[in-house]
Length: 90
Image 1: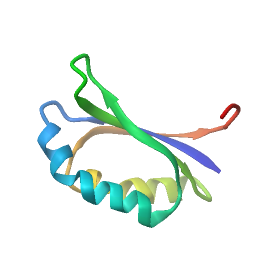
Image 2: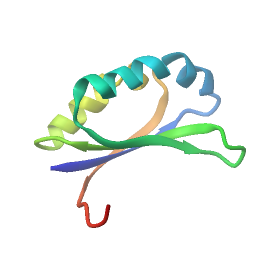
Image 3: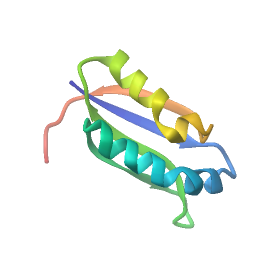
Image 4: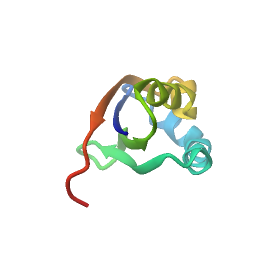
């Protein structure tokens, strides 16, 4: 089942994102359930959030993945929304 994580960074938290980026990317590679992922950009082109699409068994698995993300553990996100997602194109 696919789930989209829509994560918004806390204001002024770019350095937290940069400091934890390598660990976040390693987590993505190690968990092998991420279909697509990338940062949202603000009007200046700076990273300000994340979109992550997971292929996991259920919402509780998506929630567990999100909670274990190094970005989440570092307190980067102001909010995280997890929505079931249906792939239609791509």
